[in-house]
Length: 152
Ligand SMILES: [Zn+2]
Image 1 (cartoon, rainbow, N blue to C red):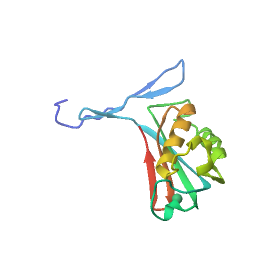
Image 2: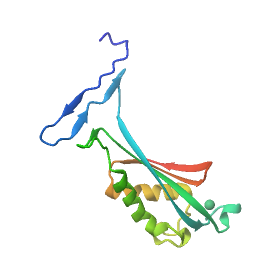
Image 3: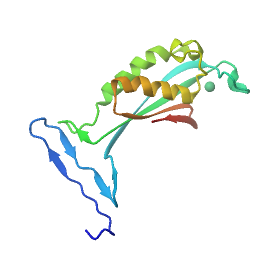
Image 4: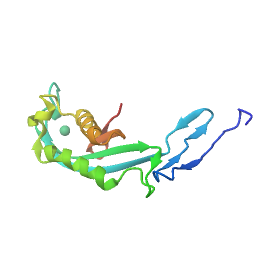
């Protein structure tokens, strides 16, 4: 390598013992990035109103909140799957059991916080992280054209 061209190396290492495939990360001009990422989307319906806010959103109203969550990783299992969509959706369903068809301002998990889409995204991220450490980002849509992301 002359150091000026783009070096892109993709190597596959397979561990016979574990059956887990490990793909060496791509390297471009010294930057390394992760190779696999999945996303699932689900929705729940709930009422809320914003606290400490002047405007229409201080009045009780409802949304069909669309939630997207992302999981990232460098290794695949024997089926060449990063993380099972069905399991990921199952963990989201557990969280939604506390949120769906409720008044979010009454939810004890929010402890009197203003339940904005940003705050909901943060809450879902941290709850999901307990079961899915590989989660990297959450997103909550209040409307089809407005959403809040949360990641660390
Ligand atoms: Zn709202």
